[in-house]
Length: 328
Image (cartoon, rainbow, N blue to C red; front, side):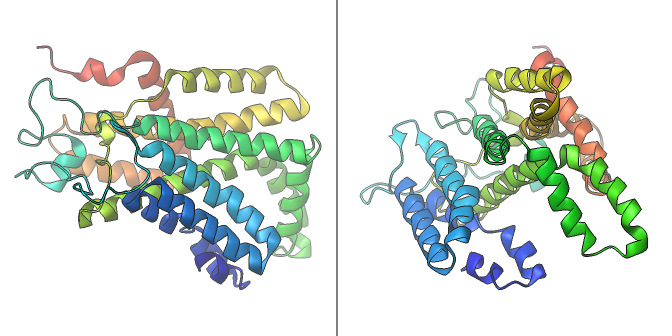
């Protein structure tokens, strides 16, 4: 229904409703199982296709299929894939024991009474790791860029320039065409990577919101992963290195794909960088103020996202969090 409403043509509806298209799909899958996610995704694609076959195809590729794949991965638990909620067992996973710590303390990880015993396993032990889910989001974003290049016959950069020029010309006055052209030439080399990165980030945010709502209602199947325990698979580092290598030595379409895939693969490292910042904030006298300032800078200065991602890359290679641990 969200997708159908966004097809009405109203630009505001298209923008805002498109941000939450996958939310009901994640909510169904993360509360009822993989089978429910498949039913929800297939039904959504069918309804949108009946309205517009092209829109149904786009909705399936951008939302339905990725949502089902991610739900299927996320519900790989200690006893296998959770296809459906068992009727004769406790259906949902509790969010851990009661605690006297504040919400801010739990977010930062600075707690003494919340699963803080030495040697205790992480809360999502036995489930498909959260960091691997982020890597899957990024891999799908990179696959979208490569697929778009193949569909355009190796002319993705030129296609992006033409599309940006057409869209921007509708809002620019004749005297502003020269400025517009310079802006398009500056944005086009990185537009595909930014678009795919924001798409992957949007899916992550929708999944996190769905898990948060379900955990609050006590209807979540798997425990909620904690940011401070986030780790990424090693293959993601080498994929980033390979994409950067293509960006450096490649020319034309190969180089274009390389530096745009680098942007997409940086998304998981952004979250890993946040994990480092949260751990560092927990070691300061005013962690809440430090985190609030950091998030304000991220919101109002887009370039700071790259700084956080760089911290995540350093964490992956050098283990910054382990160096912050107090020797025992």
